[in-house]
Length: 565
Image 1 (cartoon, rainbow, N blue to C red):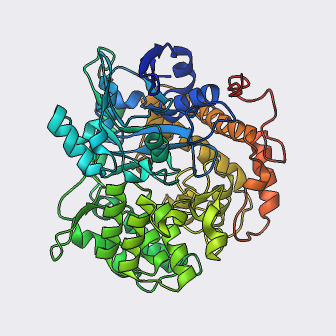
Image 2: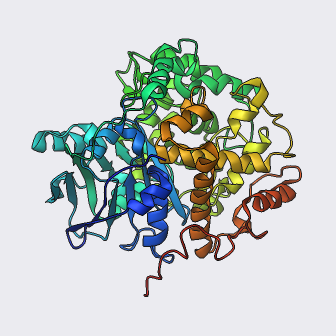
């Protein structure tokens, strides 16, 4: 099994110290990316750490495939304790950062402690430098990038940035990179911002960053990505599913009160494609499914919106104007916020005040949230913490706001929302692809009911953990066969799935120590035979029926020490 190479670099921002640790054993067992970061976080973050406290750490990590030149590998991972869910959470981002990160020669970088002064941290293959940047307080993502380019010549593809939302501890703040790409879900931007870190740059030409030759498997994958002319993702990205999701009744609308939106065509794939003015991609990827968009009338330029943003700021907010959704997307990128959570909490406010479709109010609320102004201070806490005061239902799982692909129609995806360790996120298992379906006929499932689906949910969760450890883009699903994955990672597929299961179990074990159990694996709606399906899922995993991991069975030992030790 090939794996990432290099030590762990630990940066204590409070002490302004950096040190390295040999993690070859962790790399050998967990490949890289999410797997390695989850193992490190499980063993190094105290179980009782405060998400916005000095004891929490962020782990940035790549996998072995970021040393290659093949498609679908322009991504990297970030893992930490989420201020939104209170549990261990991983997020990954595309763009062009990953190759600059590998150039430093580190397999993973841990950021811990807290700084009283606002810092820019510069990581190279020769060490770490700390720069005080008081003038960048409350600077937007683009303003921060401009400042780093002017001072040091850094490009936006060398940076991770906490926008104003991160500095102001918005619980769904993102860590931004390549200006518009996001480690989006779970609020890890608030962790970086409250550590007093405005940005981190990565630059180097380490001897460890040797190019990985993937042979014919990598060549074939790259060629297929480049020549796939009939794939709708290449023209409209994830928005290509919008009208279909609406047609089958799986598009959340008006704060989840409906499942079809009469204005779907005005914000869906064709509407977004009409605004697309050039191709966009991630590092080394020939598939080029990103969406640089421009509105000629207003001059607005952004990247996206993707389907989840179309749902959150479009149908769920009662908005049928694609330019309005583009503006919401652009504001979130500049301020550093997850478009899904932000759009959902704005939609909750619209529901409470009978203001669906009010574009001006929506954009005003986005800015107020980022700076915690007026009602934005309440909304910045997320739906789970503000729904009672708003008088609306709590549309979250484990505190994480729902993405699209509604589980009331796609029942297996509903179960996957409930079981996911990071909450109501569609990419944790990506089960919706089987139920629309977006997969070959022989792999498709009837969206209704849960019979036979719990083992498949576990299997898909494990598979996602493998991809996130590689690191491989999830949108490679039409190209990334089991055989190709075996070839790329030089391992038997069953062994890879076992590794993926260990990652999921480590997350679950960590969260169990923080009080998570079966009561957190719930949904705000009823599904047929849900409780029995949940018990079957636990049985497949070898867990207790209360949703906890049996002590002694978790991979790698008992985990982190208490903060009091």
